[in-house]
Image 1 (cartoon, one colour):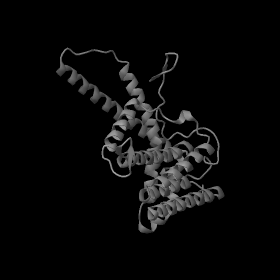
Image 2 (cartoon, helix red, strand yellow):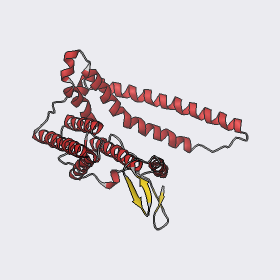
Image 3 (cartoon, helix red, strand yellow):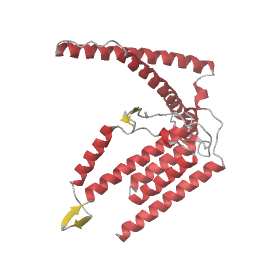
Length: 279
């Protein structure tokens, strides 16, 4: 919760996962397998070349994709205050480590190596999170399982159960938002219960333990009920095979997206290598 200029309280924006942003765009229309390949390729790139040039080029690519997909600012979650405090503490701790480069300010030498490394790692984490969020905001969860089954088709020659893994992932992705809603309802119901403060510390610990057991039991009951309902729905629709079957395949826009990603990755590798050898 944050305060607005008129003194009222502004509700913090929660983290919304696996719920696509409404609307139509070129990014929304891409095949889910293309988005997964882009995420995988960029992740490999930033693993082996986590330099500022590669991170910056990928960040620009993500921002352009967000602009094309018409992602509103309201889709971004609010940053809690404790996270800002942790980032500030991490920055100060890393800055104390020193290292090159060293600059002189007013006769005082400042080693900026640790601070720059912290900023680079933080930016890298934000870019990867934004890349995953773009997939979540522009892709229906029902398309992920079939896309994985299609991409993993060559692995069937190695007797790897690709279809079973795709079905398991599809079920997990579909159940995750429902379970989050159920747990939020349980937590809200718990907060509505009458407040009674035990007189002793031992009694308070026992009360917390009982409440935790009650919440776990209720969560397990809700999960089993949801699983039973989902099983009945899957059986009525033809079984689990339908979860990994989808006729969608890459189109011209998908090949263009992959070509752009490969071009940007190649340019980032070339620039990182050039400046590394020059330095």
